[in-house]
Image 1 (cartoon, rainbow, N blue to C red):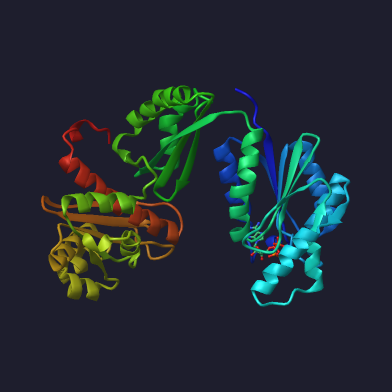
Image 2: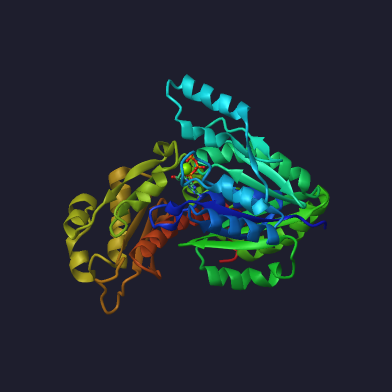
Length: 426
Ligand code: ATP
Ligand code: MG
């Protein structure tokens, strides 16, 4: 396999060194570079300081063949990227009348006066190619030196992205060996990251191609397989070797193979079957309803979520028997069960999910520590309740609860209808 150039990204701007602003350009660029087959070997954030930035660019050129600098191309005194790059490259800049004319024209069209300082943006490093900016005033620059390329791109994401896609990607592609990248993508629920890794690592660590990455959030894990080959058949064959081995280990814990979120997957299942869902939420305060309704068209299958936080609301709205609460407390299996059945009845839906528990950090009881959540699912074939203990702080516990509730419903629907249900691993 031929070698790809390494990339380094430098985000310029003193505001990016404060807690107020985050460098997101490098995340976007990394995604695009990775898709092309390039690896980002280092990235940094540098304030608006010419000497420091020139030093950073020199350092980047020493370690990577592709150097991308974003931001600091504006017209003001603190925009030092052009000067710093010229200094790092040991080149001078020249004033380009065609850029000045274009700038003047742009200002005139918007009915604004162009300040003298804007003419700084017409300075171009000698030997650089100009990258047009249809969405702003700062043109980008592409400079090659000693087999390396340095790109100067504007900071605002809405200017950077189109410029990178139309100007930089095609040029970069020419510098890369001809290779095919094929990927497999799984999303998995109902399992912790370390358990998942222990299960599938024996398979994927045997291969460097495809490369496997595991990304985890609360109750939601993504597994990516990336095969890089000279021919599509070869990449396909590699994925066909490793993918099914991983799928066999994960079984029905895989909920999506195309990137769909759990709420989208559950929505499709319900819509396909013309079934409906309602919910009753206590400790998640409406988060389940929020997740479900982010999907366009969810009104076709979602009746609504009743947020019943106090015992009184559980009794009045869901018609939970007050004696159940008195005997078992509101955070218990019997109450979760009654909540699910109450919501199903009130909504007249095919299914209803219920969530009640102790999100923490305080409020635990001896037998019910913080993080304990009871999830109920009422459906045509009865009602089930499960008790969980989720790790983490309040937000994580609530996130786990919602994800787990959606996954319980997904599994219940697919088990009920899959002829192979009996042989899928748990
Ligand atoms: P302008 O002509 O708009 O000044 P510029 O190239 O000088 O363009 P900056 O002044 O560095 O760009 O940044 C303008 C704005 O773009 C910043 O206030 C910030 O909102 C956004 N921005 C800059 N760099 C980044 C980054 N790395 N990630 C996300 N946003 C950024
Ligand atoms: Mg600026």
